[in-house]
Image (cartoon, rainbow, N blue to C red; front, side, top):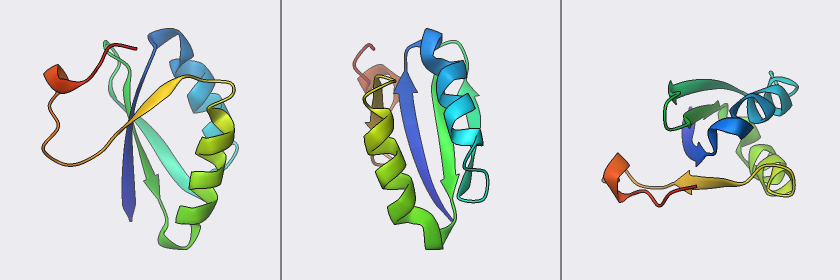
Length: 80
């Protein structure tokens, strides 16, 4: 299973979760840190391309940053 970590504004946290819960068979979303609005999306292998399309479309409604790489730390993230 692939994971995608996102940072977004706290005000958009519920909106993002609402959108992605509609695609429950593609993956699951969990909040990693509600104070700084970090979420993790777990995507089933067969749906990775679909999730990328969904995230590309969501960029129009929710401003988020994809956190890439295991070496990122919270202090390295730009503010949303």
